[in-house]
Length: 206
Image 1 (spheres, helix red, strand yellow):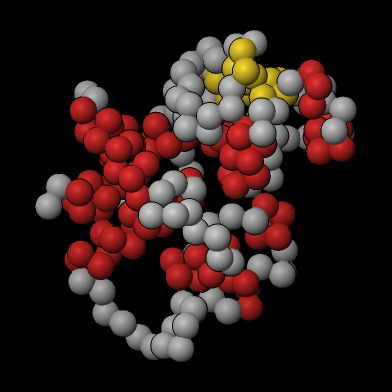
Image 2 (cartoon, one colour):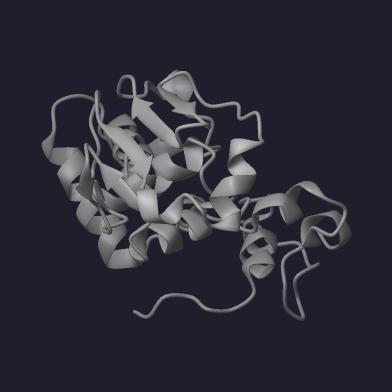
């Protein structure tokens, strides 16, 4: 299935909550969810009672859209999470959080996951001093993410040097060096993505 290229705000409206897909716009009054919080389409304002399957499906779709994954990518990641020791749902969220594109976003080096994915693909970052241009690359504790020296002069990253960035406890960022580090693997309590992961596990376990 091809990547979705339609309006990002339509996805937020479909899920009934902000997915923060457009960076700063999501925090402003221009956000579509502030104006039209109902689902898109002709019957978006109608009441619909969801079945258990419907709830599970919506939760999976919401997680996919939060992190910008396609169905095959998401399913493959779930299977890897299920094969690991521990709670499958938590393993899944941790693996989603430690993707390179998400870590770049969490470090404040991009205003959205979509922008982070684009910056990574265009080769603006290194991991442990080596070129890294694969958004799905899984990071681990101790990995250092840095903006490539050739990219530090771009207006995007010059602006970041002037910012004060708040990061989750499991990553850190030095805005002057444009360099961040994964301090530890995130715990479920440190992941603020509003996803009920147990519903996704139930869906794929059918």
